[in-house]
Image (tube, rainbow, N blue to C red; front, side, top):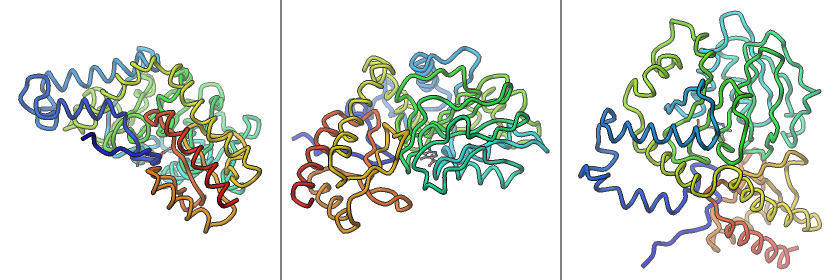
Length: 363
Ligand SMILES: *Cc1c(COP(=O)(O)O)cnc(C)c1O
């Protein structure tokens, strides 16, 4: 009997490709003739070194990462980067700029302020983060240590499809946790990109950091090793025991993504999935109302129903139909459909059918 699988719209940890789970299952007891699982082999073994190298090479291929960027697999999630970035890249006395577009960029901003000076280049909080600021609305400090932004706000559902432009010489740093490898980007515009894997690239437990080498020269000498990007890069993420299993699953997800035809093909597929749901919202005559007024995310679609009672009913009935994880974050309310890479087109189609039927019965 084949196992039960649901349509998984969880925001993170989130859906993984079935093929990846099946491969992990098949390799679980005997990884490549070792007679051990990846959880049981040494992180210094040639098998694990190959897993790291494969994941790095596949990322380089997929994102066309130039040779002068390091790729690190670290722990502590995206949230620890919120602290590590100012510790490593904002010298004493300097200030950094943050574009505050939702819960996650606000957290990054607040964390950086615990350790020194940061300024909000813009904040959309007064509008409950329902759009992004225009480039011309950014108050940018030409002396800033860096400009930080969040490419996709997972909770509010707004996404940058073209990067904000920092002043000349100011490094651009991006939290790409929830739209990483969902579409092609020009990595050369970034000094650093980071992403917790558990949204679009794998399981929880590992965060992927892509850092341009010249930035590493700015790292102060007095940081603890595990908080020091330069040391971590020199040790190729093997300074201490890495999250071996998580890195292994990331490596399988990246191979799977390449098998789909790379990021242009993945972007088309993601666009199609998002269009289906946004069309259903737009054509509902106001029954469904999107939270984002513009800059609508392809990854996390946030929408409301006419009442909270109807929203609870929607979530409950959806669950009975094996449509899981649709309840929105309490700070936005309503519903959120997360349509990450591993969510199949069929999931969007099934959700849209459910939305139309629900409206017919309750509208
Ligand atoms: C989930 C998320 C985070 C937090 O990730 P952790 O790995 O839990 O620390 C940060 N930024 C964004 C955009 C996210 O979606």
